[in-house]
Image 1 (cartoon, rainbow, N blue to C red):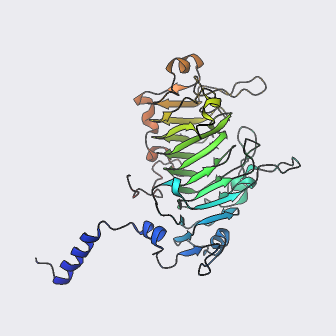
Image 2 (cartoon, rainbow, N blue to C red):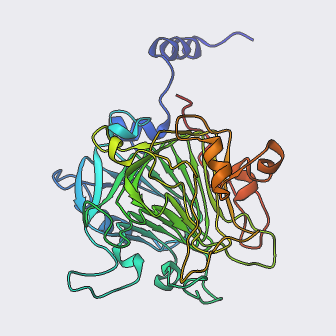
Image 3 (cartoon, rainbow, N blue to C red):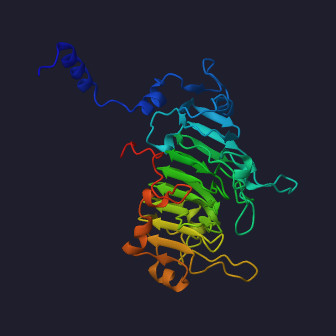
Length: 388
């Protein structure tokens, strides 16, 4: 069947214009956004709001999909998302596939204590908190953390962030937990984002499912930690110093076999800059067990010379090791000068996995579970991203 003259002309125009931009890119780069998109700017008078939190609070408390576009700038505020319906936060940018070129920063300066030393739960330090209730976001203390009430609902079913940096600027060294993000009882994807702090940068709490794609995650002490499940894909893990480990997870006993933990795949682990690299050479641990059910795996990842010969380390409290047969602190197909096979064997802490051992954890579909333990909780992940 012949094409109509109009269809022929339209095809010719589209072909000459090159490939169409994804709708998200068009909104982020050209401000050609879908109807209903909420715009935030500190300087543009045509925007709907001047703060991101006010934009979040304006969203209807229902199951509709809502999008917020944030124009370039640094926004000094804490964000709190309790809404269960899908929410997308977009940072305006000239390059939606490069986190180093982000133009939107959300920043806050707080740790889990104030200048007098008064302590509060870690969540109060967070730049971004996503959880259905305040109690759901508490990390608490002890081997099992805060006992979140059993009747607590699940929160956001599909939370997405693109091209936004989150910086906790409390101090330029580890001075207690200072979250860039606290994420609990929700599903969330973070794409081309940056998370910067020194201690406990990224917290994924109970029943939290967080997917990080081509992100930059920077810290010094236990800066990937939590109870839930995190998958870090094709990202940069930047060491701003050495303290504790990169990962510190509190596993949780359940009535079903769970895969709670943090999985770093096809990524790089390196000193944050050339000036710090010599001083931390061979000093940084991949992780330590927050409790005996800690689970973290670095897979097909390059490690620079900052990594200690043993890889992981134990966490001894009152003379008692936290390592048991249930502790999983592992590597799989690691490259780079940070991998020392002799040191790993001598340390007897790090598991160097075989193909068979890694098979249980080798894809997001296997590790992200529904609250009842059923695998395959991945419909909220954006699988349409560019491959470059």
